[in-house]
Every structure is written in C-alpha cells, then in structure tokens.
Amino acid sequence: MSYQLPPVWTKLQQHAVFPSFSHDERARYNFLANLNRFVSTVIAPGNKTAFEKRVEPIFKKENGRTFNDRFEVGEAMKNDPVYQMWAALRRSTMEMRQQNGRAAVLRQAGELAQKTATQLALHPNLQLKEGFIVPPYLKHVDNHLMPGSYHTEYFKGDVANAANYDSGLFVTSGGMLGSLTDGGGRAIAKWVQETYPHFNPKKILDIGCGLGHNTLPIAMAFPDAEVIAIDAGAPMLRYGAARANALGIKNIQFIQADAADMSAFADGDFDWVQTTMFLHETGGKSIHKIFKEINRVLKSKGLNLHIEQPQYTPEMSIYEQFMRDWDAYYNAEPYWGHMHDLQPVDLMMEAGIPKENFMQIGVKAVNDLDKKKEDGKVTEDYGRSPIWNVFGGWKS
Amino acid sequence: MSTELSGSHSSGQISEQIDTTAVNDVLMAGDKSKGGRPYFLNDPAVERVMNIAMAVATEVAVVRERMDTIERLLQQKGILQQSEIEAFVPTDAQAEERQLWHARYAARIMRIVQQEADAIAHPENNIPMRQIADDINEM
Image (tube, rainbow over all chains, first blue to last red; front, side, top):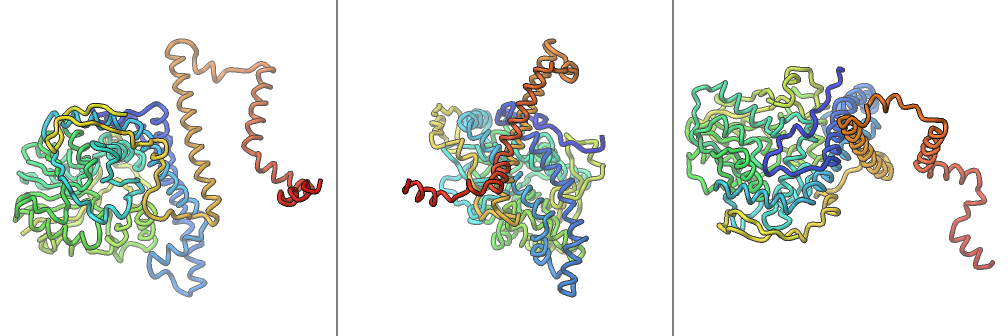
C-alpha cells in the first residue's frame, strides 16, 4: 500500500505521569491523526491547484497584475471553495483535538496531579516562583487553540493542560515527533554532536521549554552538562519536572522564569542557549528583550540555536507565505505572522552573534516511530514537515 | 473530589489537598480558546453543521474501532473467527430485519430533507404557526 499511515497513538511512551486513556479515547485520537493526515496530504494540496488554475488567473485578469503580497493572496483565496473547505476542516480538526484531549485529561485531573506529586518527590528539580507574572503575550491568546494555554491552573497542583499537550501533540503532527514527542530536541542534539564533536557544554539553557519534551534529548546527549529549562507556565514545568524524573533524567532543573527577564542567571552563565518552537509564541517587543537577555547570559564563544519556522524571504513564493501564515491567524499563533518578517541574522546580532558566525540550516528530523519514512518523499505541509529549520551561531 | 497530595512541592510543602471540585470536565472540555473564531464557508450555518458532522464521524470511527477490538478478542478466545464474520450470510428473515434497520437509519438521517420535500409538495400544510394560532383562536 502506498498511502502512508500515521503510527497508532498507543506507540506513545506511557511514562509514569502520562494520562491514562480509555479504549475509546485512544480510538478518537487514532481517527483524528488519520483525519489530519488526509486533510494535510490529500485536501491541502488542492489549495495550490486552485490558486494556480483559477485564483491567480482571475486576479490577473481583473487587476492586470499579479499579487503584491500574501495578504492579497489571502483575500482572493477566501472566496475559493477548495480553500474554504480545507480551512474549515483544518480548524474543525484542531478544535476537536483540543476538546477530546481536554475531555480525557480533565476527568482524571486529580489523579494526574497526584502522579505528578509522587514523581516530584523523587528528585528535587522544580522551582516555581511565588507571585510570578505571566508575560502579557501569553495571556492574550490561547496558542494553537489550547484553551487556558500553558499557564492556566484549574486548581492547586494542576497539570491538566500539560498532560493534554503531551498526549495530544501526536494527533496534530500525525505522529511525526516520535514516541516522546521529542523529535525537535533529538534532531538538534544529534546535529550539534555530529557537527561539533569537540563541543562540551557545561551549562545549557533551554528557553520556553514547555514540558521539557525537547529538553530531555539535549540533557541525555550531554549527560555531564547542567541543563536549566525555563518556562512561564507552572503546569508545564510541574508536569515536565515530574516527567523527567519518571524517565530518569537527572541533569535538568525546571525553573519558572520570564525569558525577557532572566535576572536569576549570571552574565555569561551558559555555554549553549537553545529555543525550540518558542520564538513565534512570544511578542514583537518581548522578542528583542529576550535576545538581549540571551546575549547577557551566553558565554563568550557560546552557542545559540533556535528551531523555528522558516522566515519569509523574497525567494519564497507569496503563495507559500500565505499558506505558512495560515496557522498564525487561524491556529492562534498570531506572532508567527509578524515574526517571519524579521531577519534572523538581525536577531542573532542582538544576541551578540557576529554576522559572519550566523548560520541557517535544515536539520533532519529524528523520529523513532517513523524511521523508514525519514528519507521518503513527504508532501509539503507548510510548517509541519519533518525538516527542522534552525538558525543561530557562535558568540564572539 | 479531594485526595491527599503526597510528595514535595517547590514551596517546600510536604502535602496539600488536591481539590478538583472546580473542574467540570464535561463542559470545560469544550472551552473556547481566546480570539474570534473564523468561519471559512460562505454560510457560517453550513460550517456549524459541518463541525457537528465531523464530530459524529469521529464517534463512528470510535465505535468501529471498539467493534474491531471485540471481534479480535472473540477470535483470541476461540469464540469466533473473523472469517466467519466475512462469510456470514443471514437468513432471509435476518436479512430483512437488517434491511429494515438500515432503512430506518437512513430515514432518521434524511429526516430534514424528506420534510423539506414534503413542504413543497403540500403547501397547505405550511401555514405559519402564528397564523394557525390566530386561526384556531377563531375555531
């Protein structure tokens, strides 16, 4: 059979704080993963056909010119039935994924909090801050349509939203992130080890770690390093610290902190500062404060890397820019749109990386669930493909 | 629900109460995320119905997977072979019962379409209810 099936949900590693799913809850996720794959590989490409065969020709005929930017493409595509149906379906599957995930974790929220507390007792690795102020950009939107986002606690000790994130990212990604949803972290750890075999960081900072799913592979790849993982969301940190304990990873501290004010850390404290799919969930003012702080806490000759969506460059077709923009507005990651007009090289200079040290690379995904497909042909699904876009550099 | 939380906490507390009484999982599962919801189809009413249909489609898949589990367990326990299911030929009476079920099921799904067709065929049965109210007030 040539049709590529997503792996089944039960392939996810059931660590000690993982929510327990009933037969039907598992089936629901198996179906949604398949539905997502169908929508992204079969229905989504129809957008390009519709754009080329009728949307663009009609626009040219009416205006005597082609599109100026992705916003004009968006306005024209809005009226095309193929786009309308794809967009309506994609929005629908995202909302269903959230509702089904929440239904599963909220009914066991008490047990999850208890399991988390049990794991936290094994090894001290969590520092939450009394009276912590959640950055305004996080409170203003529920990123990727996750009600309550990363920071909302429904009761003291709650980890429901983190457990929902951990168990549900599989559905959105069609299983492409691996059995511990750690594909990004695995990819970057492998790439750094292979590219810089003599790099031996003693202290690593992961900013916006969430539940640490991409921090763990880095900590495992550098077991002698002290890894600090910071995030604003208490449920994510609490669950992440418990999850790290459950998986036996001891060299990470999970600390609640605002990336725009990392005063808890000394100047030049870190050999490597990493972010993974974090920057596009910040804000237009905060991002510059964050890079200023990265510059401060990063050691001279230190490494700074960011896994991010690719920028919009003049070489990228405006159709592709439009498709990549979709998630910004309709999957509630609004900063994604504006951020992609920034130049990574400029951001890196703010972090103290000289222009000549700047690099932008494609790092191949590592997915333990999908080994045979890593080299296979994959339908472009703007922003959801198994090549990670990485930019960064070495500080002078 | 309230259970004793054992284990340390960042604040140094050894135990505290887990109190989930504020969690209404049935309703909170469907919490709306922040930001205005976009509608993509020309008529939002159609998109609303499509969302309901997709949720029902999901539940059909869930029932199908559950049935598959039951069949495989029955096979594992030697109660039946899946090939028996494939080879099953109902008796005439059984077949008719099943066809009747399908017919009723189809009619339930198609109710509104059937009734809209009926409305065109029988305009006399489509007097507005306010009019009927006024009419029967005189009866």
